[in-house]
Structures are given as structure tokens and as C-alpha cells.
Image 1: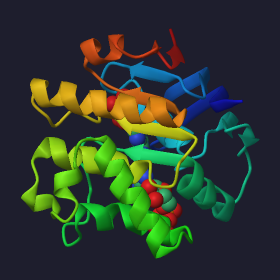
Image 2: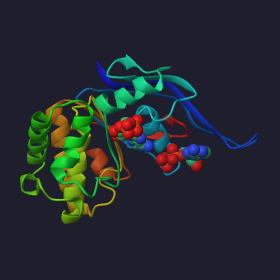
Image 3: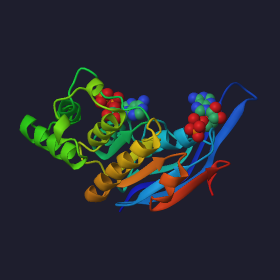
Amino acid sequence: SDALRLEGIAKSYHLGKPNEITVLSGVDLAVASGEVCALVAPSGAGKSTLLHIAGLLDAPDAGRVLIAGEDMTGKGDRARTRARRKRIGFVYQFHHLLPEFTATENILLPQLADGVGQGAARDRAVDLLGRVGLSHRLDHRPAEMSGGEQQRVAFCRALANAPDLLLADEPTGNLDPGTSDTVFDALMALVRETGMGALIATHNLDLASRMDRVLRLEAGRLA
Ligand code: ADP
Ligand code: ADP
């Protein structure tokens, strides 16, 4: 089944009576399992709004959101939080790692929160860090790592609970171009190995062109 399906998604913001902004007006999209899609949009076009709806952080005014085949429309907070923890991995422009914890511990925590035992969680963290070339950084804290290393740890954390869907918002936006390429390649390799679907918002058209498909958001719809 598809990792993500959006059907007829509409969203407006109401800023008092005459001031209504329609951001999304009928967005349909599907990201297959194993597929990596770029989401490209001019600033203000509604990219963040779309990612928040796909990530179950915000509800659309109309339309359906299906995560790995499960229709999340009208589900309550508990079901949405559960789906976010188990089925969706998030990556942002800034890594948001916990500064007082090591790389390994940052990847352990979401697993422990999900009920995975210490030993298995540690094994998975070490395995993931090895796959992105960070076997020499297991016990380093974020401040002791470079920007590219920090971001690779953030990818591992996003994938810690083996989600069906990865949502990323400018995941390499903070990095210089050379580092950005290396870090992006690491992310692509991880996604390909796990067979998850990924929707990656970026302004970097070079990166976008290396993904399986480019989705353009314009005037509230996908062009
Ligand atoms: P992008 O991520 O593509 O820059 P956003 O989804 O952040 O776009 O925003 C799309 C439009 O919706 C913008 O015009 C923005 O000002 C407006 N907007 C976003 N969030 C809110 C909000 N919470 N309340 C009111 N307007 C908002
Ligand atoms: P908890 O904090 O108890 O784990 P949440 O509902 O806050 O439960 O978070 C569940 C998951 O959803 C988190 O692991 C996080 O990745 C994601 N998440 C929560 N809030 C946000 C947010 N504002 N923006 C992006 N992702 C979020």
C-alpha cells in the first residue's frame, strides 16, 4: 500500500472575518512505499501546512489522510500520537537533538518510549549510526559533532522506530553544499534500505532532481 495518501485536502486560515487565506484547495497525492518524492514550492505556498497535515499535527478542513493504508480522518488525539510515534519519522532543517545526550542515547530514547528493550534499542541505534558512517561518534554529544554529523544522527533518530513514512522539511538546508550532498546521500541510502516512503520538502532543485519524483505546490494545488 502507499506510505502516504492525501485526498482532496483543503485548508484555510481564518484571521478574523474578512481575512481568510486559502492555503490548500484540493491536494491529492500518493507516496508509494520505497518512493522518495520531493516537494517543491515557493515560500508561503503552503509547504509547511501540507507537511503538518501529512504528519497528523494539524487537521485539514476537508479531505482524507491515509498513513500506510490507515485512514486517519476523524481519529482522536491518542490514535494520531500513536501513528506519529510508530509510523512517521520527522526530520527538520535544524536537528533538534537533545544536547545532554550522546548520539546513541538520542536514538535510544524514541525506542524506549515505544516499549523496545534497552539491549535491542541500543543494537538498533549502533546499527543505524554505522549505516550513515558514524560508528566513531556513538558516544559523542551533539556539540562535539559537525553540522553534517548532527543531521545524520537526526535521520537515524527519525528512523529509530522503523516508520512507514518519512517527512522532511529542508533536511539539508543548514549545511554547506558539499556536506549537504553527503548527508542527502546518507538519507537516501537509509530510506532505500528500509523501503519506507519519503516526502522531502526542499528549495534545492539539484537535490529534488535526484529523487524519484518532484511534486510542485502552486496556488493551493499540486501542479
Ligand atoms: P510555506 O511553508 O510554503 O512557506 P506555510 O504553510 O508556512 O507556507 O504558509 C502558507 C500560508 O499560510 C502563508 O501565507 C502563511 O502566512 C499562512 N499561515 C501559515 N500558518 C498560519 C497560521 N497558523 N495562521 C494564519 N496563517 C497562517
Ligand atoms: P510525545 O511528546 O509524548 O512523544 P507528541 O504527540 O508530542 O508525543 O509527539 C509524537 C511525535 O510527533 C514526536 O516524536 C515528534 O516526532 C512528533 N511531533 C510532535 N510535535 C511536533 C511538532 N510540533 N512538529 C513536528 N513534529 C512533532
